[in-house]
Image 1 (tube, rainbow, N blue to C red):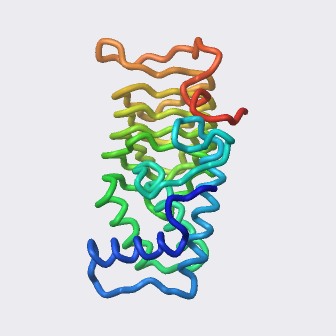
Image 2: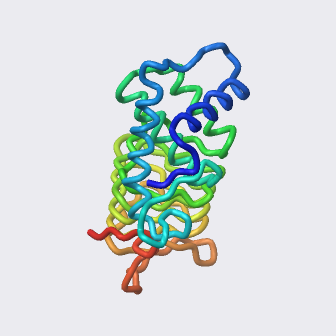
Image 3: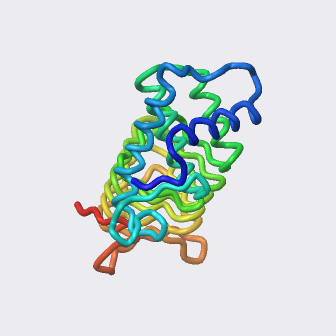
Length: 222
């Protein structure tokens, strides 16, 4: 993967950001820090190489990462926090990264949340992403809320468009697109469905296109 900064430069940038925004004196542990950054970048590489949006791959198909690309940096910070939590259990640094994510990008996404390997943020300002069983090909726009009671399954190639909200525990199928400002409350959504708002009422219809919303953003298939 081509990166705008080498891992040492990314490390230096992150340390400065953490110290500036959260100056509590707690420092990163250099015994694992660079290893975690490398792992997070590897996870970004695996994710970005499947994304068809401009800026994620060069003309030869190689994935690219820029620390100035807000959506890419949002993804990287999640992968870093999740890696540190899973492998090194440094809760205080994970909490600092979580707060840094909120400060920089206006999104709440816990490092404990198990996001899929392949997903796409599209300016997810104002989004609150709760714990759920997510699948590859997940698309998340801005002001999205996932608020679960227990275990919620969200299928492959699911799109949560701006303002979409999922509350409850009923499963969301594969190739489902939940439209702008639509709230799905404790309702099972079948595969290949579009959920939309018409005159203030939530309606569901089959996907009429050959490709659903998320399939147009990823090069993965069911």
